[in-house]
Figure (spheres, rainbow, N blue to C red):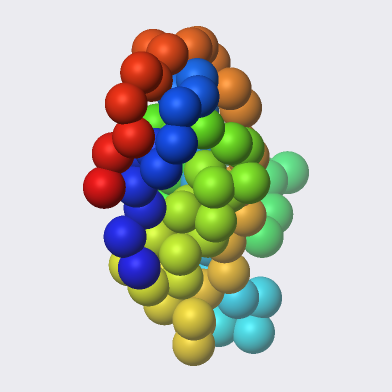
Length: 106
């Protein structure tokens, strides 16, 4: 599905999304265990259950928050997270008005 910037006259907004992708709790995390071991080697014995993940930021230009959220959901499901092994969560915040459209785009 393509996400048009605009289909009618309106304000184009810029949204920033912050996405966190993590391994599901049922999946062994060897990278997390290695980092936990390193933390313990540094003397921080109170640190437990280290899990590693990915953090992604992206921006979406669109007229409505709902469209930005739909785009981020689709990108997360189709590219950023492996649905068999990983979960994702995200936030979307409006950061600025980019422009006022004067003509429809296709």
